[in-house]
Length: 263
Image 1 (cartoon, rainbow, N blue to C red):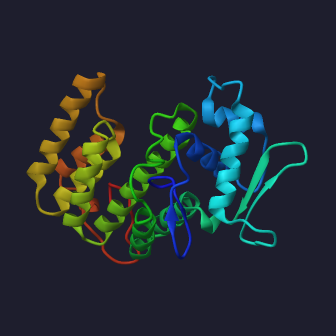
Image 2: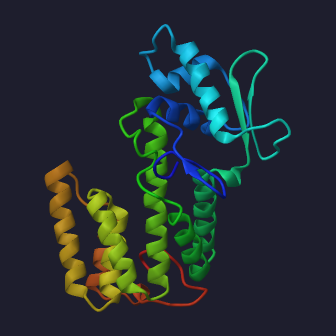
Image 3: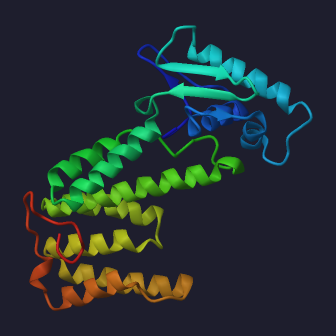
């Protein structure tokens, strides 16, 4: 799900098929290990525009998915079954779904960062981000029934990238952090957190004037675009940079922390 929707094993990587076929696969994965009734699956595939033939089409999509999985009686790791009251259930382990593995690694990386272990946090978040192969559910970006899931995954991806940058800052890798944050800012220009981290990366890299210039540019952009002043985090960081607050200095090592006021 972290890129084009695909089915993979040790020997092959295949696409489930067209957009509606993919939507069925994603719906079953989102509700893995539980029964999803046909009307709910139809909503994921067609939304409010389901044709009279939707039920028959759904059966065809599920049948094709079953063939692609190669599900056989006695298979233990993946099972696609039809419920006695209708609907379908896909039984699959969490570690067999890339989006679930990703979320687990992000949660672990955040916990490590909060616990003051930036090396392990950086490694964990790097592995998490390495699972991505493109935009979430690529090919279904304009499929409205899945819009909320796409937004959730992309937000988690941005959060993971910010966490990795914070860990890089804690480790004294200012150039690495700045490069990743530049990309985040291009993708989400109104997001303040990566701008705060980039200000700190610039300051710690001996570029105080650039850090302050970034604050001024951010303030102008926020006022022009949305009519608001920068948030408390950015404003507090600007004041700390102006007075060269010692708390901003990098303290590398396992005990380093990740907040912009003193990583």
